[in-house]
Length: 303
Ligand code: 3HC
Image (tube, rainbow, N blue to C red; front, side, top):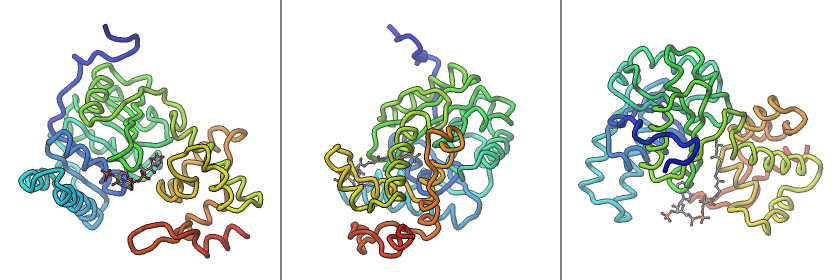
């Protein structure tokens, strides 16, 4: 028997072609996952050809690495590469039945991108957003069919993190929700349905953790000490590395969004903005292995 509140899987619509709006870090990672797990054509777009080429290039490289590791055959690698196309024209999304966006995390940009793509797609196609902390309902507010909008929030590294937050708005219909849940299962991820509140569940808790870590640093404890102090709690990585993984700009933006929504409960760190502007917190070797804290970053934190 279906648990109370769970969508009826029979209502799920087939996903035969995926459109990805945005070709950045997150979008390229999940485009690869859709390609690999659903084995359907994936079309990717971004603002210009250079960005599109970078996203498609990332997927080609990662497919090559999977073949090198023996996870897929070279035939499959060739087949997967042939299923990916890049475009700068959203009209090429016309036959996509699942479109997902990971464009710049600003409400008006996401609204406009969805409204533009809606002109080309079928009224049945799902529009999913990977937003990490904006209101999914507001992202769909300019659409003719807001009932097709759902949050579909991945975590980085996408290939490894097992969770997707499926965010239901007041308008999301059963068929859309069901398609999202079945798609998450086909991607071999665990999905949870969350309310459309800032940060959903995971980012809300992470924003608290990272915000408090930054507050401790801004109050005079070294970042090294904060990392060391947190280690026995069994986090998969210390706060500094988590910030580095998420990206300093994204991290600062997530904290800001939470602070704006709940000013008394979430901390906004000016230093985190300075670090994001500077570009790095950690010093790494050529292979990307962390060597320690970046000296310039430590200077910024020292004030
Ligand atoms: N990209 C892709 N794959 C990666 C990766 C990366 N950046 N980092 C590690 N992996 C893969 C490795 O290739 C390896 O895969 P394999 O077993 O198939 O070879 C696997 O992950 C395990 O890697 P390692 O053994 O080298 O490393 P760890 O055991 O230390 O695990 C980790 C690495 C999975 C990244 C772990 O440290 C972790 O879970 N960290 C926490 C990550 C986290 O909290 N993510 C959520 C961020 S918040 C977010 O994304 C939301 C957004 O809205 C801001």
